[in-house]
Image 1 (cartoon, rainbow, N blue to C red):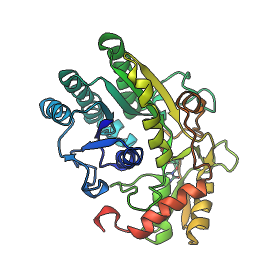
Image 2 (cartoon, protein in one colour):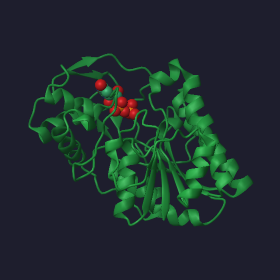
Image 3 (spheres, protein in one colour):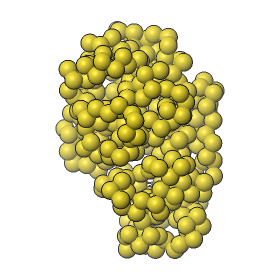
Image 4 (cartoon, rainbow, N blue to C red):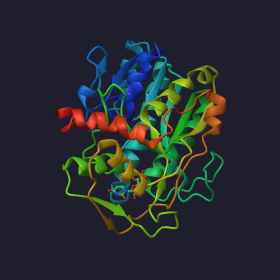
Length: 329
Ligand code: UDP
């Protein structure tokens, strides 16, 4: 299938592109390179440096490349920034997604895969989290993702658009061949920051709170390997052949892992010490977030392969060790 991957030069998008190729599909990448890296995409893959809000340019690519399905990863994703500058987030994550959906209508493309987030649930009422939990996001970032989910539902009814929205837990790790990996600027995620501290690229890691009501006092999260995450996006293609679908799936391993367990696992995998200090809680961090992904497993025939956090961290380590400067190495 010919798939346009928007944000295909970013962390999740580039791993999806790689999995699409491995599965025999033909990805075409579109990215404005604001956060993406040109080197995250193999030179053999068609690449368009275009902004997703450019409706005419997007429609032209969709027609010229005979695209059958669009995957959309081009969102701003810094929670704190979304609180400080919500209009930037609504403009990019909602406004430009509307423009993209219009371009798809212009070009007659009616299948869509969307990257949503577990942040759309806000503070969950129960654990593990199923898709039927109420969605009450506590920051504009989560709200923008929920807004798009609602738009997709309306488009399914009105125009017959078929879409799948994946609510990610914590995407982690890197391609197992070490060719691509996580390279964010600024980096805010725990695993790369712990690895950087081990490598001496940072003085030390700050643990955001050790007084939560969890077994070791630090927050529990569900770290899903980026290749497992990507494979789910491809496993849904068959379901989208039927018009008018709007599907929603959680993607996680279902295994809660604490911040201290991550530090210990990074030390074991790298053989290095992770210098850290205990700090204050970070605003907006729920004590525990982990997924019930049984819906995705049952309906998509998808099973996460990386169930041991050390295996996931080992792939991240392979990437960071060989690319200490990220893609600019
Ligand atoms: N965390 C931390 N120190 C850091 C970065 C993150 O203690 O420098 C914690 C954070 O409070 C959360 C977990 O690590 O409990 C995962 O955070 P991350 O930002 O990677 O992902 P999030 O769960 O916020 O999407």
